[in-house]
Image 1 (cartoon, one colour):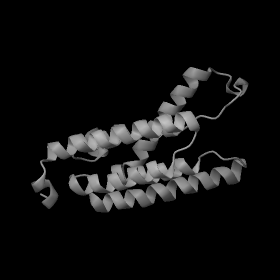
Image 2: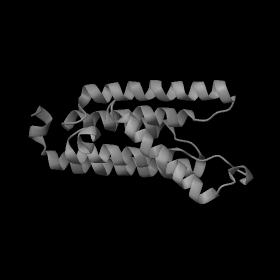
Image 3: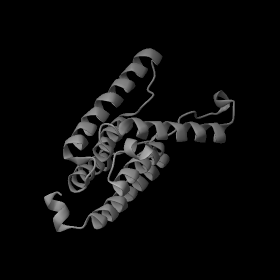
Image 4: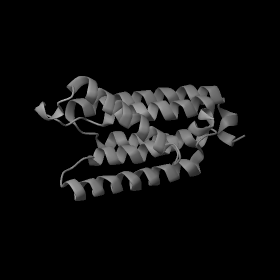
Length: 172
């Protein structure tokens, strides 16, 4: 067992982590929904808190959290760049890229794929249900991705915080 876990009980850290995660994701979701922007301060808080929580809980651990932060940034920056190159239009904002990197500190490197899957599926479901079949008829086709990234982060990180295991171990 880790040193910090001996000072604080794991259930106390889990509750604290969930409260922090939900508060940050609520703030990001509201801001992005209203202003179509995820401020750097919110992303920085998310990254720092993820690294702190990851050092206190059994999973993902500081090494995997750091790897997740780097992988999230590299993967999302690459996706953003490729989309802009191919489609000649912004498809993923810099705030989203920074959010995905910061989220990697909460879910670890392996948790990024399921997080992005949950986020993408909820965004697609919302777009399909709210806009119907004729998306081109909508005057403003832009959709803030932050709230959906938050859904994915809460599902994956929340599951890992509560169980103390990787999301893949939970799906086994």
